[in-house]
Length: 185
Ligand code: FES
Image (cartoon, rainbow, N blue to C red; front, side):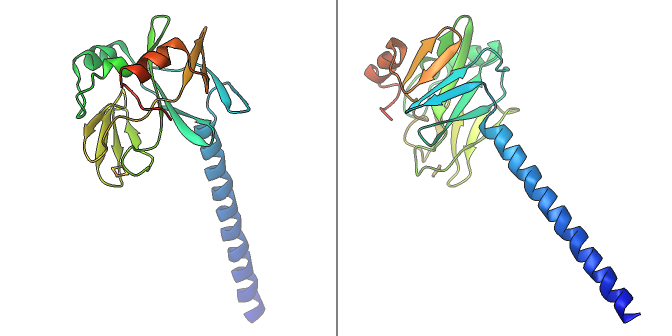
């Protein structure tokens, strides 16, 4: 009887352990999907991302030089909204978007410009909230609520067809740097 009870307890322990291990694998798999969702090539400080399969208003996260990079393709409505938006820093939201063909993309380092937390995106509200101190950004990653002093920083990029090469400063990026749309990362 005592042996039976012990046997059942061992079995329960093993079953629970199994569930935990499976849960862990599931979590790792989910993380991998979130962190590597696009066809991309990484080499010596450069990350090349192919944007052709990105969906409107679906945030994807890449990695460049160890930093999270947000990519958010804007729907037509989002572009129209960005035309009229001005951030807390007086900067126009539309100027932050990268135009490739007929499409507009927000591309930014996913670290809050206040103290470096990773903001979360809400696709229904089309905004980012930084849970650390309540800072907010619109869908172009322009700052809409303090304490962040500015929008999310834009990494150096070069447009190459439907691809974006992060780590190389093309003319569109140089213009953003020169007019103060972003600081150098
Ligand atoms: S770190 Fe984001 S609001 Fe403070």
